Image 1 (cartoon, rainbow, N blue to C red):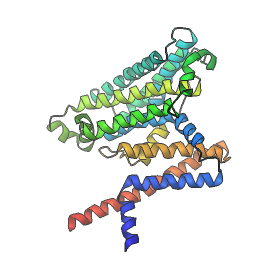
Image 2 (cartoon, rainbow, N blue to C red):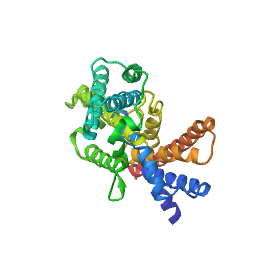
Image 3 (tube, rainbow, N blue to C red):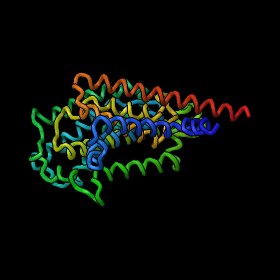
Image 4 (tube, rainbow, N blue to C red):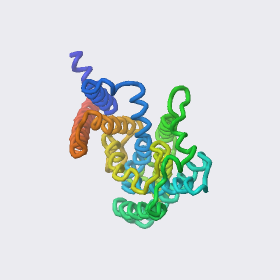
Length: 329
């Protein structure tokens, strides 16, 4: 009876069940590669996947309103390539200004997408697909068949090498982002409006919520995080290229889905998104570390993602059943 009670406690929380999956994944990889679960390696995983973890927060908001954005890595590349070339051509020296310019570009990109979707009534998948090609094309135009290497980036690349209290500054940025979003989504009117729009758009409009404004704001935030992630990516990898992080938007979306964020809107948490991002980050590092050939890595990643999602769905069903039983009582 006690075992059953413990099982119910575990499966009654999607986040707890996902945390257990993450622990099992870490243990399995560590058994295969004992050097995997070390403080240094974990820090490297978090730093190298920081751009994914940051964009997951924006994608959480986008999915919560029932939207989607597949243009995020194109925005990232456009912003990252722009500041990369500015450093290379001597037009920019300040690290802070580099992050500010990249974020500002992301804001503009996200705002354009938000306006088209919210007021142009264009389906999110169609709108963001179009902008995905537009922004990636801008990145290639800015590059002009060049790229910004480590030497061209000067001190900007050194930012990602700095530590504060023994933890890399990029990881501190990720932590601050998650704390801010946790507070916003849980305790602010804007956060509640996002959930309301995704749960029932018509009811949200009747209750006085400006749905168009919320949608535009959400896509603008997504763009800002994508632009900021472009600067993070350039600093971490000490490289600015027009094809940077191409295809990684699928990792961002997968992280949200793994974390229990509903694709139809209205359901999902910052904690769940964080756990989903950690699962994706571990998988990204574990597959090459275990000596799996490149051609097979995406297939195995897909299998692992599907397996985690199935476990997540089972946990959700158990949770729904438990809630139904409480109502009947």
